[in-house]
Amino acid sequence: MSKEVKSVNYGLEKIFEGAEDFLPLLGTDYVEFYVGNAKQSAHFYKTAFGFQSHAYKGLETGSKDHVSYVLKQDKIRIVLTTPLTSKSPINDHIVKHGDGVKVIALWVDDARSAYEETTKRGAKSYMEPTVEKDEHGEVVRAGIYTYGETVHMFVERKNYKGTFLPGFREWKSDYNPTPTGLKYIDHMVGNVGWGQMNTWVKWYEDVMGFVNFLSFDDKQIHTEYSALMSKVMSNGNGRIKFPINEPAKGIKKSQIEEYLDFYEGAGVQHLALATDDIIETVAQLKARGIEFLPPPPQAYYDDIPRRLGTHMDMMKEDIKELQKLSILVDADEEGYLLQIFTKPLEDRPTLFFEIIQRMGAKGFGAGNFKALFESIEREQAARGTL
Image (cartoon, rainbow, N blue to C red; front, side):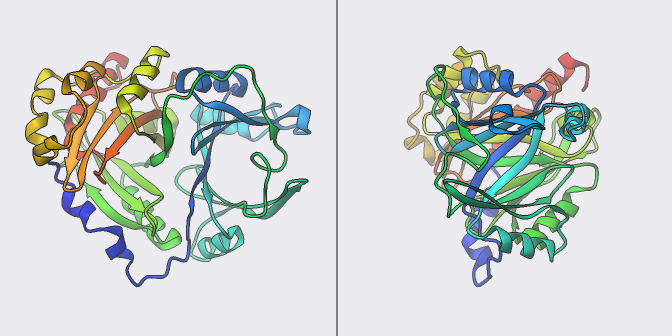
């Protein structure tokens, strides 16, 4: 089993015992991407990942500056936003970073309180509390900056009955490919620059009341050529988890350095999307054209029974089927998990998705790190960026 067990099993309940959660978060509300062509991006995410048409804002709804398409699959909402004029500040983000995550929206019961509590603790304001209304009620939103140009938006929608947000209308489409079994966002990972991980760990602790409940150093996350460090931050109820990565010294360039070079700064590296049947989900995604990282060697799959130990008795999946699809397996004291990582979703080697199925395990696949990063390095070598 992986070495992350003790850290995970310390338990968020113990860490937060007796502490006041000044920033209660109900979950992830939506994730907004700034993209070069939202209409075409929406077609890709629908076709390849099985997202459904949900809501729309654009010229037809009175938005003269930008257009947004909202896609939904189970509890996951993604917003794809594109500027409509050269004067829009959204262009600056796209020119510098390419397509990428701008807003991680967090569902709260009181957006004003969330904004006040975080800004008085040192958060830089992105948007003061703003009430947005239409015939379906009102939504209160407020935002703060986190690493890079990324934003945490607090969304209070208890008095709203509309499809998504005021200013949006329901988006009906004849083309809605079947879902692929994606359920919710398990976690989101951010990459930050050299020596910045602990700065942002402290920021999440001080500003948002998160705790660092799991850490990996370059002795745990390394290959022959490269290394990185990572710390996992979580809020009080454990619904929001943000691992933060920074590069570490190695013989060659790490995946984090490659990301920082091409994204031109800190930002969201990947979204981990949960499924209840990873074999079916991955099979569908592959059939729809999604490319995943190359498989680990035969020895990796031969070693699964040893690494899972007693959890092999509860394992339902056929190892040969997992190998066929290049799905990785890891375990901790609570159970096991299955995971796989896509190749970058855009031409810049930056943003990608992880598909994950938890069978009791609470960790992040530490036992897979070596196999995973060797696969990434093979891709880096092919790109000439290792």
